Amino acid sequence: MANTSTQTPKAMRAWMYDSVSGGLEKSIKLVEGAALPFHQTLPKDAVLVKVHYSALNPGDYKMAELGMLGRVLITTPASPGLDFSGVVAQTGEAINTFSVGQRVYGRVEPNRYGTLGEYVCASVAGCAALPEGVSLKEASCIGTAGLTAYQCIVPNVKEGDKIFINGGSGGTGTFGIQIAKAVGCHVTTSCSGKNVELCRSLGADEIIDYTQENVSEVLKKKGQVYQLVVDNTGSPSDLYKAADHFLLPKGKFVQIGGPMSLAGIKTTASRALLPSFLGGGKRKWEYLLTKKNHEHLEQIGTWVKEGKVKAVIDDVFRYEDVPKAFEKLKLGRATGKIVISCE
Image 1 (cartoon, one colour):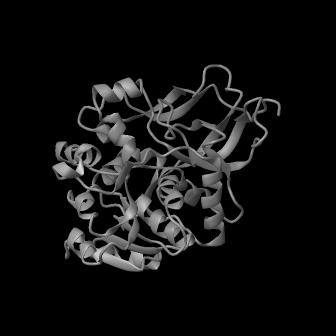
Image 2 (image 1 turned 45 degrees about the horizontal axis):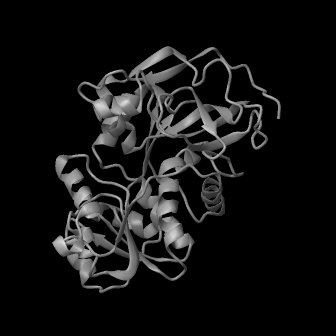
């Protein structure tokens, strides 16, 4: 397909940070004349998308606040954000999958031109066409949380398996419950008491209120019945060791989240490195790194269209209120996703 475009401006609005003194929410600024996410010519295998909605993820601020390591990974000034939905504004000359004006959604890898810019440069692997009947707002939530849930659950289970999702009410957890049910699994999840009904409405078969019960002890009493554990929170710290008692011998423990505190990093490191004869867990452990995947995005979009999966949205902020959105995200109490409306 020829490189075609709408009238793409030579500059754009973007929320950007240089330093993050005091936290990203205090350092990020709205820039009116930011550069577009490519140099002069759009890469031949990319699409330029005008962003209508962007969904936030904890990694958006955690990456920015990594200090020296963060600046090595992403040069500044930079715009955060991984997840988007919007309309194709321009296609690279090798693109025949998408066309100008088409509504799409997806995810970009961490880079200095994130989805809190007015335009984002996406690859085919990180982009999918919006199914009929699915809103751009809902689709913006799929990119990271949906893909992460899909990639830690679907390859590791079969119909009838039992899985435990630790942290069922956040962005990835709400997708995880529904995706696990879509592929025929029995789902146990944990959440606080105020989110029990939400998790039940999404399809959870059993729910553990972590404010009232010891999650590890409750699971140990069930015996070795689970094929998969998905740990969205990294807490309690003894969960992986306790999994010796509730994960099947050939089961897997997949960790996708955890606090960036010294204690949280220590817990993750011990799970990954400490052998069982020195007190570590015996079950297979994996730290999942989410990968862009066109087919996975399409499948989740199909499930949303069919009503088998829905995006749970905690709040929608105006584009001008991005700092407030990050303030709320950092509280760690969002139920589902926090979305930015860029329209």
